[in-house]
Image (cartoon, rainbow, N blue to C red):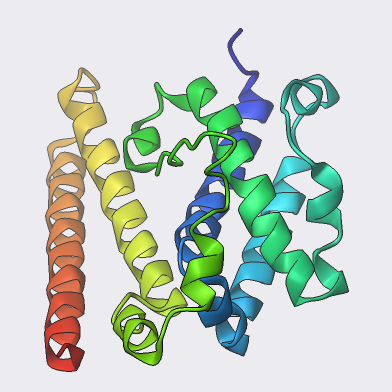
Length: 209
């Protein structure tokens, strides 16, 4: 069943924040929780997910197999933040994404990796107990701030592209000047995304072994 307009808006806002949470929660638990900035970023995005989810209709929320209580408990401590990130976020993404697949933004949504029951959460413990050499290697991954920055430029580029391609798909009533401006915005956003990604690669290569 298709979502109502209000449910669609709420679902997309939930998913925008869930992308960041899911991406950061893929890193080892100890690495994330030992960094107060990452914990703060996770808590803020989870709170934003909670606020956006409140905009879903009661019927739609009831359809989702989501432990909402975990999302409500994120202020109780870092363990609660991690629990919500690991338990709530993948289920929200899996539950809401199918309803917004026809939205242009859906092309950039991360799909959670499906695991069997026995494998669920299994990689987490070995990561915590890895020798120093292995832990040092994980530090070369993107930080929470870098993930957020990448997410932002991708969303900006997607929005600019959509505004431009809307015209190409048939909205030819726009004045020529507006069409040129949309095309220019799309090109600027694409270049900004490319520059940001190049900057990330450069910084990774400098910090790498």
